[in-house]
Length: 157
Length: 292
Image (cartoon, rainbow over all chains, first blue to last red; front, side, top):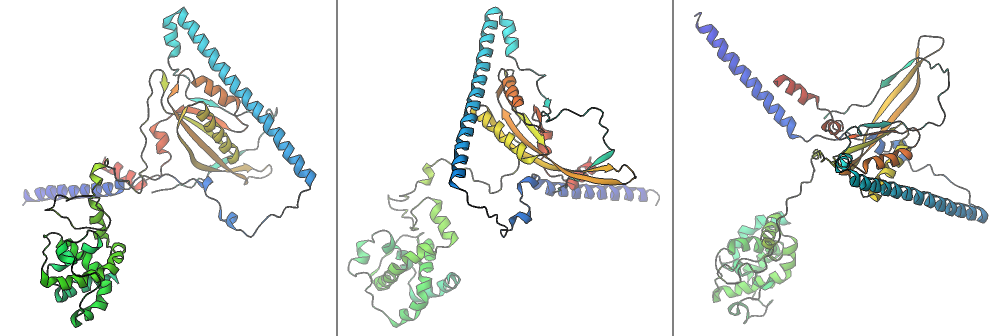
């Protein structure tokens, strides 16, 4: 009697544990079968209040001089932007040319240094930079105390 | 109608036609029939017996399917012509000429599958296996094999390119800002720039938007007041196979054109970056934790 009971317990436990494990494995397989989904991006969903077509803006008709002025202004602006873009492309080209020439000269100087220069820079990435500001920070500004709470919607599959 | 036809088919089949005649019923639709069958009698001329007239009205709709269905069965055996069956055959022919288009249109999915399987002509012939022209018109076996396209493309991670000594692997250019239009326009600009400079852009996507509530403490009082709700938008442009000499130049250009309020981060692509785009699966994670 004393010997039989612990044996039963062991078998039953082992069986139960195995059954539990199998059940868990089956569940895991089922869940893994479903492909992972991307989180939907709120930026690309237009809010419902803008889908109402009843609100229409009515603009007054423009005079001939006004339209002419606008067209000519647009032409001047596009010409200015084009020259800006051309200058930028020229700058890029000159940068690349200068770099190639420098590398050529370096190669003539010493092959070792050239090979070291050609290699990729491990310290380049990660590279972080904040955009420029409109105004410099105010001196002696005392901000009020507060906190930031993250209320991003968490999507679960 | 088609359902009726299928159920009507076997009954009509046994009543009106001798066993081998339906096998010949496709002749007028496609291949010129053998001279023994059609030459003496013009199509459409058939001695109408009262038996056949009864079944005719119901047959009109069923005949197409009947012939189609029976052709599959009849095609297995060779064609057997007999003078006795010729009358029945010509009646069948006459009806078929009207029904031939109905057949091709009303073909059941099974039949059309079989027709398309070997790449045979659309008007589902039977196979003349004893003739040397067996399999004429088949072309699908000559085309290269197409991988069946899945309707839902599984969101799988693309292999991360490690890069060689002279080339960087997948590099992420992440632009973050509170202003959505600005960050989108900047992302478009960077993408166009990379296209112009023939830098390969492997992916260009948006990260999920983060929302923050900013509360501040009032001057006189202990209550936190809501100041604003700010949304942070992030756009990512993934660039691959960037050469080691050109990378600093590209960085320089992007920096010089960086607008106000846009935070730039350039780093290498990792699996963690990809996983952050996917939905969380708490159940799966729980179970996996329990397992281990």
